[in-house]
Amino acid sequence: MTLRVNDNAEVVVRIPLRCSVREALDFVERSAPWLLTQLKSAQCRLSARRSLTDGDSLPLLDERLCLRLHMASRNTTKRAGDELHVHSTSHERSELATLLEGWYRRQAKAYMDKRLAEFGEQFGLQVKSLSIRNQKTLWGSCTARGAITMNWRLMLAPAAIVDYVLAHELCHLRHLNHSAQFWGLVEQIIPDYRSRRALLRQMQATLEL
Image 1 (tube, one colour):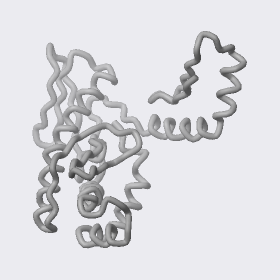
Image 2 (cartoon, rainbow, N blue to C red; image 1 turned 180 degrees about the vertical axis):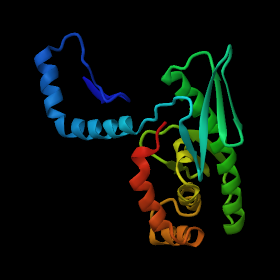
Image 3 (cartoon, rainbow, N blue to C red; image 1 turned 180 degrees about the horizontal axis):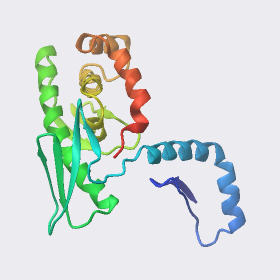
Image 4 (cartoon, rainbow, N blue to C red; image 1 turned 90 degrees about the vertical axis):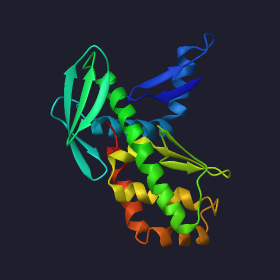
């Protein structure tokens, strides 16, 4: 039996054919503490969703962009000044969210590559590769081989927060732990990392499309 909460804050239970409804209900009841936590988190994300209608304001690091929607025969997303023009075959929210995520991923790759190179050159740290993903519970990660993965949704946060997470993962190239030496190196790169980390924790539920 499996239990999960989807992006619409709905509980989904999967059971084998041989299981009874009573067994399924018992399974859900036993999982109640975990389930309530997951539901609360999903509901927070759901409430933070943007309407994605024409004229909406979208964050991009320290900027705000005005969303402009256009019906078109093919899907494209392009920025023009402080406007983000989305041409799509449908204005259904799911399709718009997919197009916007793709655009934000591209912005994330460009910005984060640049900042990692700048930090790395200054502090003698070299990244092997950078991947942009949509992790559910992580903002970033780093492997022993020097491969860094970052969450595209960080582009919905201020640049100061993004730079903190980048520096955090970059420092794992030297210290693959959270030792005093690790945090000392983070502080060299981001002297006010504690306040930035606290702000990320406050904002994390709002970093959704």
